[in-house]
Length: 158
Image: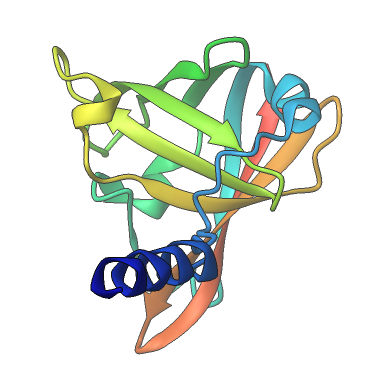
């Protein structure tokens, strides 16, 4: 009797708990990924107060340093690269791994040489908007002066 109560309890707990959906859902939006595939350049970075305030993007450099940066997205293996090459800004390049999920979020990690993506614990979640043949935008939420605002990276196809 005691054993059947325990089994019934475990059965109830197991089937009544539903896994939580997260923003990093891996249900892919293949159509958007294929549209983003290719070589891109960030033509502008904007957020409220961007003419007066500095915001560090991706823990790398000032957001404005990303203007002119070059990005490559490969959709069949969700790999790519980026190159930061603006004057008066730190030079930086990295391989990336990325995907776009059905909720419209791009999940992206900057990879360290010799370290696999699955061993890279931090990454970024950005909203993908206005995707077309020649441009798209990635939108990040950042803290500017104690207020969360949208920081928009405007990409144009190279």
